[in-house]
Length: 59
Image 1: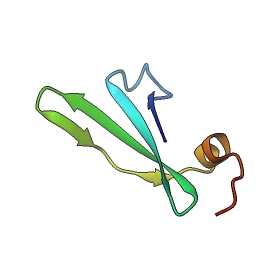
Image 2: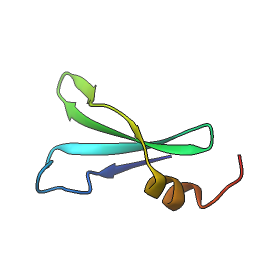
Image 3: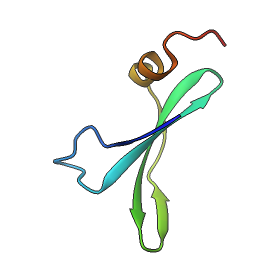
């Protein structure tokens, strides 16, 4: 759905976030991109990302 800089760039300067959709809900996936590849930190559901990116779309 989207790829953005981490919302707290001061604390996480090299981290980006993927926003993905799973079963009509948005999940945030923080990651770090290096020369060796991409390291996915974790993923978590986000009400704010669901509101901002899905805009109340019905499943």
